[in-house]
Image (cartoon, rainbow, N blue to C red; front, side, top):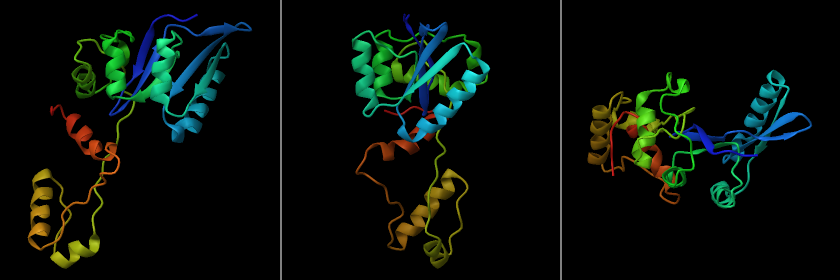
Length: 204
């Protein structure tokens, strides 16, 4: 039997949501962990096994369906919400939060070691004062640079934002293109902005 959904993760991030309790079979509680990253399935399954060893009365079933967000919304519409959910801090999460799907974690002890900026991101995305997720991971962003070009132009690797912009201007002045971005998939251009957002800034 399922109670209302709890959220246990978010992030730039990635999020987890959790329902009040799982189903019970053979004297054990079965909890479904639903997550949206196929590349992380093996990792989560290993974590589930470790958890089960420490909690022998609980079985964890890891579910990683294709087109996870569509599957999630369909299941919630059918009142078949998973017990724990891992997904990105995105429009789907905001939509579900705004419809009162998730439990409010404001004041939860698990937020004590989370950077306030990340918690604030949840509120900004949903437009709510509730904290409907507990961040558990964040992306590490990087810029790849052309060493040959830097050597040709006598450039050094920038360490600050101002140095990055100044370096880009020098490359542009040389007739070269300072940045190449992948625009085929929009999410690839979102990642740098996610990093800026974690500093507490806001953009529209």
